[in-house]
Image (cartoon, rainbow, N blue to C red):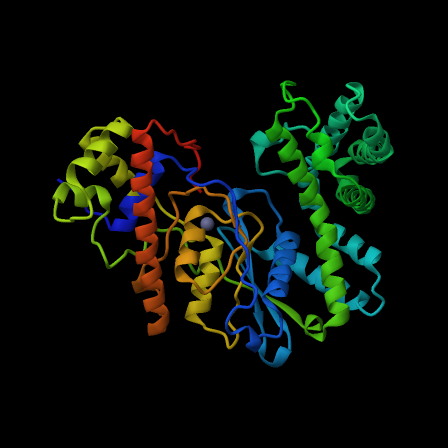
Length: 456
Ligand SMILES: [Zn+2]
């Protein structure tokens, strides 16, 4: 017996059985002068910066199930920008309120270019999220297992104290110490507040002070080089801990950069005086079964190898290797694929935006799809295969519950339907190439790092 599922479902199931971290973190470079750019008022780089700024500012949770994505639809004749947003699941009401507050402040402060007041407004609009990013005790985090992690500012101060104690670079440590002392003090003040105060005006003032100091510290010091001086034989300070701390600090400072960018652009460019937001309702693509399948092959690589009719798949190579590498019998492998096929799956926010644009093609097609996190492997590969949009980065993990909605539930213009079908076929080929690579590497005792519990 062979599996009865489509090729994409089968191949995603097989890859997720092999491991879910399939690629390292990848950053993509934007093309410099893409064809068609002359029709847009915003350059591709500015479209990316606007999308990134709103992706950062509108992110309201650390819940991986509620990841959001943004694209920017330029209105004809440079009459305005429409920020279209989608989330993997859940409501977008809070994100809309945050946007309204930011836009209201932007309109009020553009003429005066009062960046400090605008940034204070941003801090108020993003207060809950900033408390989570700081890992404050006042944070309302969805990630219960991460709540116990040391607060970012305390971690930074500890790192500087280690360098200072070991007298590794006394001049650099002496220069940074007054800044970290001030930060420690400001953070202690925030932590000493009641929960209510931390979420009210006094909390936002304290956050404004902390984020501004972090941003100043990062622009005036090579903090990565300094923290890298910590000897890696200290068990609490592996290199990964330094990188994670630097990422957290940059995550805080980016609020200041986003505020600076938006206010500066609004002052220079009238298109920023007409910013609107629209959401793709989470009910448009509810969780469900099945995914759009390729037409080029009926079944995945495992079933084809058993059937033996596909010359590109060597019968003895694929099915027997998969069984031995995964330590599964034939029936166990089939039932694992069945199990995957019957799991409900999600249409990720990035894919929702792509499909919306294909279903309702605007006069000026957005060119960037930007998430507040790195894109997952399947979103990145599909967007790349589709070829009409750019993303900034991909974290390389495969989420087995990913899907493209079934074609029969979408009314698409014929050209869009053909483009998506082609992208689905290409994605399937990418995945089969990865499966082959996995098998080859496994044969040379290559081990994938796996985060098997990741099912988003
Ligand atoms: Zn994704």
